[in-house]
Image (tube, rainbow, N blue to C red):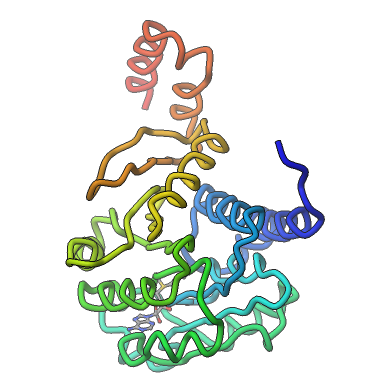
Length: 278
Ligand SMILES: C[S@@+](CC[C@H](N)C(=O)[O-])C[C@H]1O[C@@H](n2cnc3c(N)ncnc32)[C@H](O)[C@@H]1O
């Protein structure tokens, strides 16, 4: 295990303090397990010396954005894009951005406004070059704005243009029955000729994409090692291996306990029992 640098240690403490203590008082959508996965990915990037900006499309009150922000290292910057008060552009009524509440939440976590470029506009009206002026190439970006097929496709394209090869795009709601057009937009994007982003992991409500197959394999391997108790399995999608991480439920914990996992007969009996108890 390599020694943890002071910068990494301080970053992980900031991010963990936020998602364990502060995030519950910020309105929005972020499962605790996904907050842990995002924190782990940021930690891997810092350990690997990957430098770049962070950003999100679809802020609402900043619940996930603040976690990305708290991963910033010296000289790194962020962007926050949302239609905010122009809710006529929120055509599918996903969330309800509020710039005032967002800025107040940023202040509550000790954020510095000068390190956040706010874009108060429809994501379909911005170019990757506009966003890159604010942050440079990105190492971590969340897409959680409009949930239509066209907007998801547009936002994935922005992500592909903005991200470093080893950077990670976090897409919300791909497997949510309430928002099926997100999957349509995302997978239409992935299947287009020449597109590089491929999924490598899934956690509650989030799907993680990367352009570099070798970086994706490193992220996936490190997540599997860090979260054995959440592992539901692996699947191949579009030629890429995808790790599936679930919620920290009693069923998942028991099934993934080493004593149970390595004993197929016990695994089957306990799975059947837990299934009945559900
Ligand atoms: C589901 S919420 C985002 C939740 C947020 N990521 C969190 O961590 O809680 C979706 C947000 O996207 C914004 N939005 C909807 N359509 C948009 C568009 N076309 N461009 C930019 N933002 C949009 C909404 O105003 C809303 O704040």
